[in-house]
Length: 241
Image 1: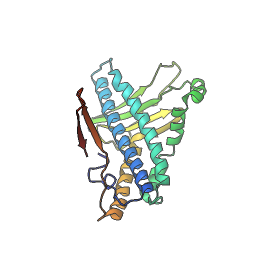
Image 2 (image 1 turned 60 degrees about the vertical axis):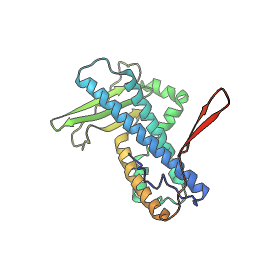
Image 3 (image 1 turned 90 degrees about the horizontal axis):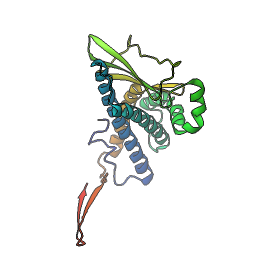
Image 4 (image 1 turned 180 degrees about the horizontal axis):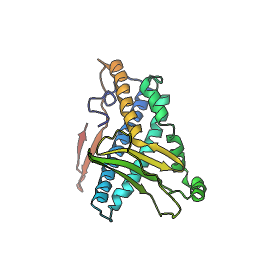
């Protein structure tokens, strides 16, 4: 879990100015969507790996589609996180974690631009015969004796197209799935590496905020409301803080 229940990002002070509150809310939700997308992506790729190992030619189609959905959701949320961090008041832009994050995510804007403007970028895909939604590669390891290098390609296969298989040599692998890499439109990014940098960045931001917010009263957050409506006009409500 990228953000714990006790994180200062979940417990913003009630006296915090509106600008900082809204920026930090946006940053928190980006981080949580990134966390959810990456966790689901790992789970789906692990399921696909197990299908390979079992020599099951009929992969779960939803796992396949979900993997690309989560990979692109990850890219979109990282791009949004970049923009919020750059303009958030009170965030130290030259902190080591911030610098590493910006360096690791240089390619994100290019990938996100391609995905957001497929209609105008389609000529590039046609000319270079590239899969429109890209290629995902990853390494999967269950024990020290062997490693599986896997790839999934979105869309119709083009005969001339070749796809890069990850070489595990010299790579540190965190089981069971690591080095998840998305390639699209001529750009490649290691999502696992980006996620690791974001994890460190989150800890750095939390440390900054924890020091600033200590002893301040906290505001409520993430309100849920459910109303039970009956034909006789009676209304029963439940408020879940």
